[in-house]
Length: 76
Image 1 (cartoon, rainbow, N blue to C red):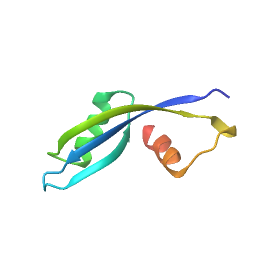
Image 2 (tube, one colour):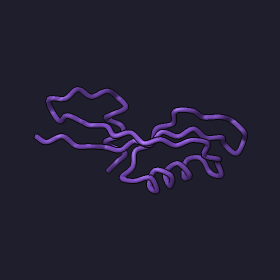
Image 3 (tube, rainbow, N blue to C red):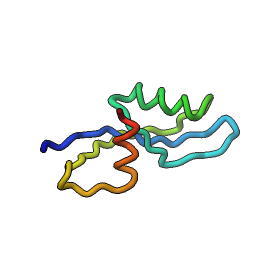
Image 4 (cartoon, helix red, strand yellow):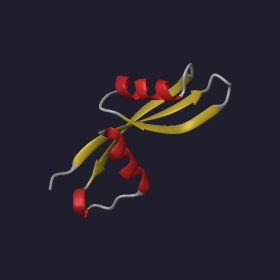
């Protein structure tokens, strides 16, 4: 089985109420999709920082943690 690659975008934001949220990870096929998902959850937030990281999932033989499983479900 081949490995699949998932892009995760890490955000640091300030909510409209002024609360800082750090290390908020959202998966997406590209940056614009990740930003769109973020703005659906946090309306009118201010994006202070964004970074991209590529995560490789190993299939049946690979080891998954809870975040990997949730990210795979959300990505569909």
